[in-house]
Length: 324
Image 1 (cartoon, one colour):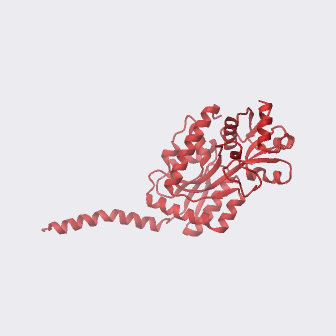
Image 2 (cartoon, one colour; image 1 turned 90 degrees about the vertical axis):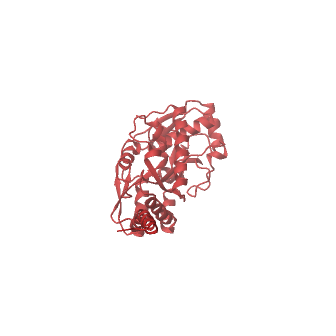
């Protein structure tokens, strides 16, 4: 059979289009089976609650179940590694407590993965501001008064946290460095709230849901929030950055997938997650958890992840933080 040159070129062009067309069709049909959403923290914690809120919205939007799978341990590293090892087909996602992942990248020296390299960014959910809260016995009603008190009493203020290398610890260390104060870090394996209420520890850089009820009841005093902007949860609390120029510490949450997941799947997930987060019902639930919803492309979220990883690496090194 003789194939003329024009026919040959048409056949080649058609063959080249087929993979792209089938890839697009695959992305349009996605998902055709349930999707696992791995959370590296126990059920009942903020990350788990957040994963369930957004997963339910995605299930309703896409007609397939997004099933939360808790793989707790090692500061979230067990869950992250499970996603790194998963097939890059869009059916395994990671609920990223991105700030913890960024800190862990430098805190742990023996990780079997590189978070920035091995997890492809999909979409941000939002940012959680933390609150600088003190026991009422501390003679400071404002953050400047607290800084002055801490400078006058070096090494005499106990700063609680939920463990070495957790965001409350890292946020406090960044504050110590930038404000020029010396406070004693007291890590807890469980909750620090009882000792904060009793005065065993005097200050905490805490997720808002953990202490907001005690603040509103007058059992604790809020001095500032850690983000650049004020929080809708505690609108009267100023930003730390108002008094410590350049200070900014937020807990970011988002979704990632194994590297090499098709770009069409990542883009589809980004579109659906952004729509879910913008839904008024979902947005209200996020705000109740102390999370300010955000919108980013995968590339924008990837840049934020890289920037945060670099930022917290400097804090980990300067503070001499080492994983237990």
